[in-house]
Image (tube, rainbow over all chains, first blue to last red; front, side, top):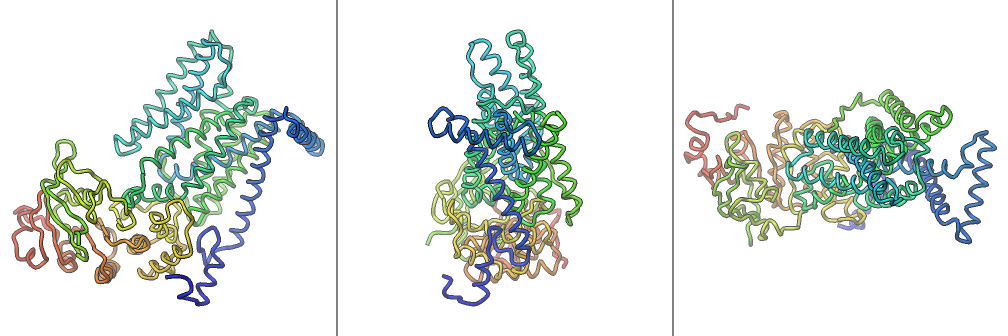
Length: 362
Length: 246
């Protein structure tokens, strides 16, 4: 059954119209073009941001130092023309880079989580990561080691992810109760450890709770850059499998997909995204970035692929709008970004012809 | 030729509650097997055992001549679960995307080829929903949604179609058309296993019947089932049989 057995006009037309949305014969190709253009801009932005993090890392090497200086000059020019006092500071670039990357990876992973009704897992893993921050604080205080708190958060977050998956495999479901116990349990552990260690360390935990542009460390930005590349690659490489298990897990099992492995991959990627994102968004708000852009996109998208496109676009818009608001008003970045995302969500309901799609979270 | 499915004294319990007890039966290629029994009789569990979704406590299951644990030709089975039928689902997945999932077991991590898209198109044509390709699954009627799932099985070029109460919530007319489609597919050589609570439909359509209530009460051709006492035995003398009153 090759193409040349049916050399009709209709098949030829079909194959030329077959864009990345699959064969959407009847719907707006203009709309698809606009979405792809927006994704192109976002990708470019992400590459520039990854470039900054890379240059900042390697700025002592001969060629990189020149390029890095150019970047700084570009930043000063940007400040000059915008009348701001933002882009000349490397630490602002770091926060911005981290934010731009969050705007891509959080909705990307969230698209699967939300539709698997696993949205609360993001919240749970954020709380596990909080325990991880607390453990690292204590560990650093006791040993005098000067490692980033985020590495501890990442390790504990991933352990938490594997724990959630282990529970789900045993109980055949992502049940509310075990998840809720884990959520509050890890947060309780974190508060105890922090109170116990307060005498030993002077570090404020507030930045981690509510998110702050200033809390993004050099290590944190580098970690986010590496993790983002891994997560994007992971989602793109496993897109089909993740889609299948999200839409019809039992049929995916019958089709002999290693469903448990993909579930584990998804939960671990969630932990990774949550840890990266909590610097800017804060532990309490980080799950919103996994959920809200996806919920908004699901209102207006015609297909799952378009849901992913739109959730990344809306996520990025929320991040940038939130950053602008946060900088202009000197308010926390986490709350600003989440409020921006919710405005987009309300907007998507207003323009949606579907009415409010009931998305359940667990 | 190996049977499509071969169960040998299969037993399975949920904790202490036996669901399937010592059932042996073979499903041959080209059969249309109706799997019937009262509510809670273990029909779905038996189907899950056949497909490897559950592991039997004792006994063995073979799929296409291979022990079910080692079977890896997932594309040979098209499965429509009770859940996928019942779910109205808010997930924005188009009919096209759903049917394309039938190709995923073939392509793995590679890109879909033009041949894959053609196979999807043909499957949509066969079940008569090509015009709905761009619609969200959640916008379809029950009957249309069933066809979309069947199309997914066809797209995967399945030899075996396993359907768990596919017509719950589907109106009578669409249901008749749906069973006509199954008949046509069976005539083309696809083996079908159908769980259906409406015994009338099963005896009309299936050429083999397995009647279970934890144990196997009857397994044979439809005529011998109709003549036997298996129905009353399996459903109990209280006669809580679902009548075919359409």
